[in-house]
Image (cartoon, rainbow, N blue to C red; front, side, top):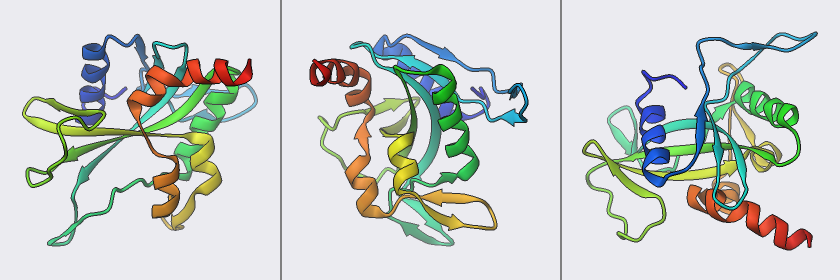
Amino acid sequence: MDRANRYETAFEEYLRQRGLPYIAVDESRRAILAGGGPLKSLDFIVYGVKGCRLLVDVKGRKYPGKSGDKPRTTWECWSTRGDVEGLTKWQEIFGDGFDGAFVFMYELGPAVILPADTPDLWEWRGKRYLLRAVLVDEYAQRMRTRSPKWGTVGLPVAAFRECVKPLWELTHLRGFMERVNSA
């Protein structure tokens, strides 16, 4: 976790207010794997109420975004290829029962109106946020190159709609539903 990153700080407060157990990972030091190079740190390890365990990489975005002077009304879901590879590797290291997830934390502009009962619509320090999550395995299967030069990837709009969920669904339902489905 980078305490200078306002999205990660806001995410930590979201977890505290929801009473979700978590570990904030110190990003100032990169992990070095035996026989390998440095591995990008994840931001949080989150324990859900139904037994789910998430390895979280927080992605802060504004909605609407901007392209020059024009607002962009696209739910940006880009990442770097290195972020996808790193989160996938952490998932392998932690093993069964741990799922890597990108949490897209959208800071909403004042003109954005959503129903008050929208899952994971949250306000903190005068800013409104919408939290959405995508499991890294689903992201990796559907991602497309966004910029080869910058090493960025993203999801097509239809793919994002299929696999994005309110974070609440993962932290409160995921572990329970997996146990029910495997029984």
